[in-house]
Image (cartoon, rainbow, N blue to C red):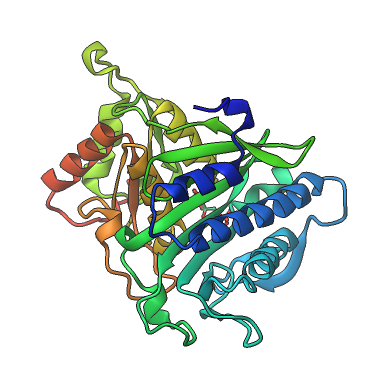
Amino acid sequence: MPNLRFMTLARHIIEGERMHPEATGELSALLSDLSLAAKVISLEVNKAGLVDILGFTGDNNIHGEQVKKLDMFAHDMMFRAMDHGGHLCVMGSEEEEDIIHIPPKFKIGKYVLLFDPLDGSSNIDANISIGTIFSIYKRVTPEDTPGTLEDCLQQGLKQVAAGYVIYGSSTIFVYTAGHGAHGFTLDPSFGEFLLSHENIKTPKKSKLYSINEGNYLYWHPGLKKYIKYLQEEDKATERPYSSRYIGSMVADIHRNLLYGGIFMYPADSRHHKGKLRLMYECNPMAFIVEAAGGRASDGKTRILELQPKELHERTPIFIGSEEDVKKVEEFMAKEKSEITIESKK
Ligand code: AFP
């Protein structure tokens, strides 16, 4: 085993590829291009407090949310880093309503890339960690033709690789190509991602939960009972749990992945499909968390088995330490009643 300090992301990707003699090197090239985009976005995020880049553009994205300049910068950077390599046939971005075609002047490849260029961007002004999330699939339509929506709407279990980049106290690139989840910290002095978290194993059970408790009134009764259960005292099961919620999915899931924890963004009586997007947030995160030994479901069904119908569809999600996710599923299964709004006293 080489000295970990000198295991760069590029080398790790190439060594991973050697485990697959049939590999053409295209996936490795894609991951390398993604790491370049991550470095440029990281630089810009770090400069955000210094240059006049903060603030709203005044435009809304397709979800009706106000878009900040950095979201658009990250979206453009991802597109420009990935459009010309000849490995992709189509892309999809959380910031763009339709699928994104590869410009006709470039070669068309066999992979599909879906990404959320800057998740948690409402936190930028407060210097809170934010992230880029990506997901890679093999195309299902015939080669050498432009990719289609059908290539994008695949079940999460068909992902060949997924990852996220967290821009925090340091920039960390976490990815899985199906064999474990690995994290690389950007060394700003020479601009390389170096292996810092080899083969991450998330604890099977945790003492930590992450959910927006401001939505309590609107939750499923089983979820209400589960959260109360976590708050009760019981030494044998290490309760009460601690609550940690940043409101930036990449940051919340990264912390829970390392220390153990359950992150939840449920459906509620106001939002029947929750808030988070299946293709851009939930599938890639589920793929990584499962690669680290965790679990992810919508409360009943494994996230990776959900059949997507729309590019921007949302899903409830319960993700993290396996035993904790199973426990919330049990609580919700016990309560047959549908989500109802509690009457005001
Ligand atoms: P923004 O990108 O608008 O900041 O949303 C972030 C996010 O999609 C995800 O990263 C958070 O976990 C979640 O929304 C927070 O949502 P609430 O503010 O409703 O808790």
